[in-house]
Image: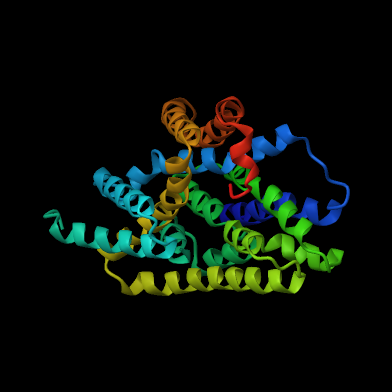
Length: 104
Length: 207
């Protein structure tokens, strides 16, 4: 099978299974508080690992572009700006930064 | 959001049809971006699929919470509801008082189709927009990640410490494990969190 097709179908299956199990066995499921805590922690650790160091590769040549974006987004989130606005403002700031970077 | 994903997918050499199919079939914001980034960096299909499994394992918890809240349903509708469960639909439904399957499907299917539509828009726009703009869109997903994580970091020092440890761990492991460091750092981080983070903070359920 084609590499990309394998990736898409494989990801579709492994993503669907964890969602599907509760749909089939919702009445029988009862996990221990420890397992629940572990699963609840995963979003935090996954996000941390996703951001760092991936954010520095947003621009393959200028590592600080991603850093600026991350700092702007964190600052806006700290000030409780809504999610959608944070994303849009961060993109706008980066477009502005690019316009003053002489390499372009 | 879909635009940011489409930008990476196209850059990774995926066709427009493949890019949109993935949004329809996989439907996992972060998972798809990771998959596309890993395709871009030439990772093996097995590494990509396993990473997706780990990153999307959280949907197990969300799907369970959503289906617990729903009262009027059957297995068929539950399966559909399960596929359209993501962070956003889970959060919106958890905050509502409603327990109807139709309310949930209304919220979640709308989000699903707009995610696919966003990927379609992204595919079309990328041909028209200048490089600076598409490069700037690459930040959008990271901006969302940072925006989701920041309130928890601000509110809870233990979560902040856990985030810092995991980030450093991921950078260090990346030197040895390459693409696998994401899964390993996520799991080790969550295991460390069992000791670092108080139980009380996580019971609120907005993880």
